[in-house]
Image 1 (cartoon, rainbow, N blue to C red):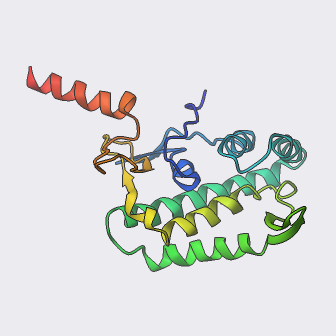
Image 2 (cartoon, rainbow, N blue to C red; image 1 turned 180 degrees about the horizontal axis):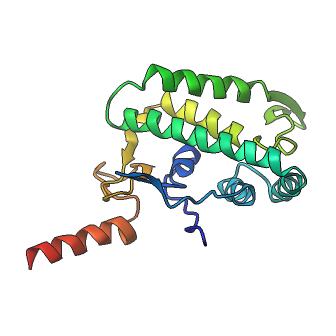
Image 3 (cartoon, rainbow, N blue to C red; image 1 turned 90 degrees about the vertical axis):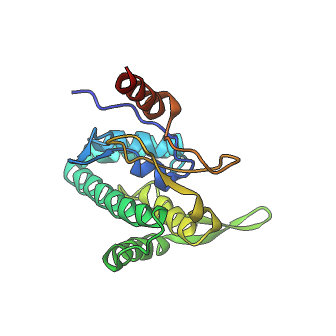
Length: 199
């Protein structure tokens, strides 16, 4: 069975990771990260991995399918934590303590890999062994999520109004009234639904 296409409409890597599944009333549906290769694809397209590093991790995952499965399970669990945490923030609520604890654990693991490396102009932050660890692409996403939560942009986090969507995005519209993850999908469906009920 073919997975739905990957889309990047959230305006932020943590939100785009959340958007790799539909958050329906019956639970998550439409899994877009069913296997490790797709996770590597997402990581490359989101900018978490360079193409060469994505190829390396795909090859590593094929050599270690059990390790790849464990890494993907961690990605799915992190996605669940991010969804609950950021959805609470979008609703104007404090995240649950358990979710913050889980996110802090992920953040600690990520930051243990963040270090300064020399450059021609001084130094830059880099992720040590990012391309060697199967769950490495998750580290910059978790770090970005933490920075989002404590930034002014946290006030711009929105959840799509579409029925059984639940995708999230940063509302950068001029009036701050964006309602849909994509006008061409959820927005159009809602317009069609309104037309149908009006006739």
